[in-house]
Length: 215
Image (cartoon, rainbow, N blue to C red; front, top):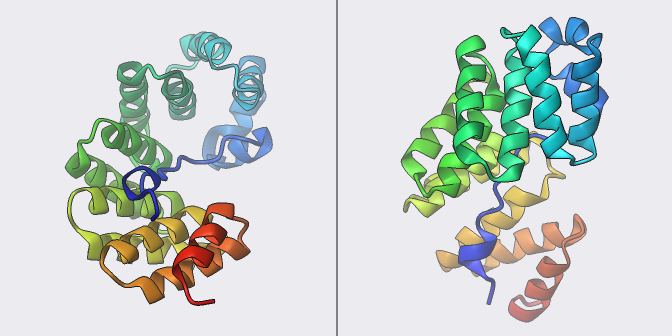
């Protein structure tokens, strides 16, 4: 059997791996920010997963750039990674106040609500992220998780499917959809998702496919 209650929570945040990609996420002010050595240092520290140092660097950056929604988002992400959820939430909220169209801050605020099992609030926050960016595959996946956890499996499947349509190589919603389908007794459809997930590199899906499906 698949570990449904654990595996279902494949909540995902926006990728913070490549500094160049980070800068491109907010084109309207990233060019000026990227000239700032503290901003560049903060991106490098986040990429290196040195979140304590990133918080310090971003705090110094924000002292001189208090209107930077990206700075608050990044510091919120660093606090989030450190498990300092109250400070992370405060920074995400500040980022939203400065830039109400930020899908990233709404998505990550929703992650914190999800961690706290406040699934209705999580769903609303992910919906804001989707409204701001209809191509936000992470927010669709995350809202699907929140809906599944709050007893709306059909809504969850719709969101996982939307996420997959945006990016057919995105593994998490494929796995999440398979878990919900299995819970609904739709094993044939779950097997199709496990087959896809296996092709995307999931070893667990390969195991479930062999154990539960006619292949």
